[in-house]
Image (tube, rainbow, N blue to C red; front, side, top):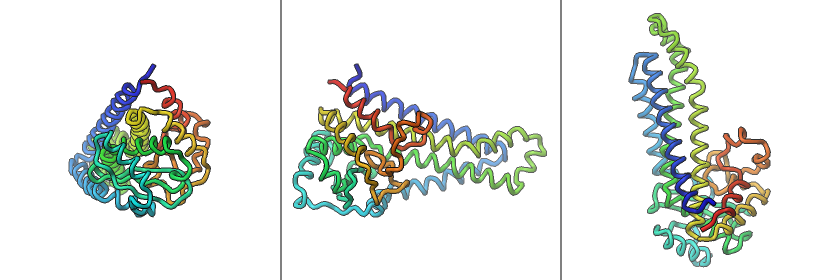
Length: 301
């Protein structure tokens, strides 16, 4: 029977494996493109742009996300019980207590953001506070604290950087091919290499996105297991996920850019995804909620 500890260890290993595959993809794509045009500068330019993009995202993504979500800082006097729950869980996890923000929306949901535990924020909707009981709220807050403690924001920033590198390389290669910059290389007998490069340019952004989504799903499983370990009560989070999933009201402030941050996909047009099979699940930011609930309820110890 799987335990809380084995779920945590398994999901960490799978995330490391996916990051390793991602790095191999980056190296392979960069090598093929550089060889096809006999120009290593392509890789350097792409890495430089992606690094700048990642730096901006790393330091300012939390402010941007809170602004997009129209989240307002929640004063301790306005909701002392919620603050107390978060503080107690933070002490249990050995983390600084994150700032608490409130989103005025009746759809129950929550997310965590911030580049590290010292700059972390947890945002909850009014619907979450009103519709969940104490044990369920504790399960959700523990899940979000787990994202902070597991440095998921940092991991996903690295992943976004890698996706950006792949996208820039692919776009650059296609543009150079379109404008005939690869003619010299083709004349030198590099037709096969150019063809391989073109296929990679078309498919590698898709592969990169699929790996990014897979890592996102694994981090959700990891946060579920770590959160359950924190509270020692997996049923609290399982019941919370059940209520959130069965609430069909869409979260008005959510969009595709921020959907992956929430504890459950806030875009209700994803309803029924569990029934369409594993292929459709490849393109989801979150694992099927039924599977998450099943795993939580099977946890022992």
